[in-house]
Length: 474
Image (cartoon, rainbow, N blue to C red):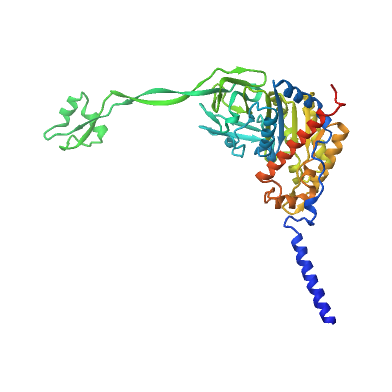
């Protein structure tokens, strides 16, 4: 009897261990079957009334259907690829009007990834310096990347793939608003005449002498001998001789070049405006300046609505943007009504303390408020991730806690992405749903699109709460 009980207990323990192993995940976290049903907080912005200045503008846009509102979303690799922000842009513009594609940058020419819907090509080689690198004197501005070339007659061809983003106006942003570029729609063919030495040859006939050949072509025997490397005056019938001459012949070749359109200057950029919607344009360099630097481009149409600009650099941290004052000064070119900031993941991989992290956050916000005191600011907490694919990223949890406390004390709005994605326990769940990349830091296309949908819903819900609030300021 005792033996039977031992066998049963042993089987039970084996089954228990097997189940325990199934519960554990390769993400280095332990789940329970009930984790998927974790109660999430309401998907609203925290301290949403801090965005009142923006909500009022949004109400006027809805009511009057005139003007444009600019939302600028700043971040790291989560933002550079425009997967999350494309969803927010699409939803905002479906609801409040599509005023254009907004800020774009030729990431392909900087040999990095970028948005799928705008393509760039060039006839020149471009060099870049990113804000994540140590300063070297390069003018790193709005895009977080200084893109520059010394090539003469260089051009960048821009093509917009989505008809909904065709544009009437293009703005070119460069350091100090130097007019280093022109804009062009059409090419012209130019004929180039080249003078080349005329080639004359003579086939020696039977009985001909070198002297008679030289006399007939009005040249000397010595010249013929030198040109044909002859050692004597003897020549054989049938040999072909090159005949020296001072005559020339013309060769016509053709080149194509862009014809600059008339562009106009403002204080922050220069621009070209078309009556018709455009899908293509060329940005051509002027040759007066030996080094041409591009900070970014803005595409707009003639409609009222939302411009949603995404600015991201792979690997970027708050400190990287803080290193470059030109970034903050060039933001003026976008006329921001709301600035959303999504940073923190890369700080966690530096194992930065939450105190040091918040110092950089505070510095970033101070820079924004210094330049744009009437612009609303929305901070987002970093999404859950793992350190080195297996360790719980507790730094993200600390940053989230500190951000929420800071926002409450200083009256800033927060979207808590960390909690909406289930916090520390969310990595394994999100991975099973196909939301996370294998490195458990980045998200998949679906994962970023889900985050974009969540953030838009939080913005919209908080805006509707404000509209329905009888105590809102008139």
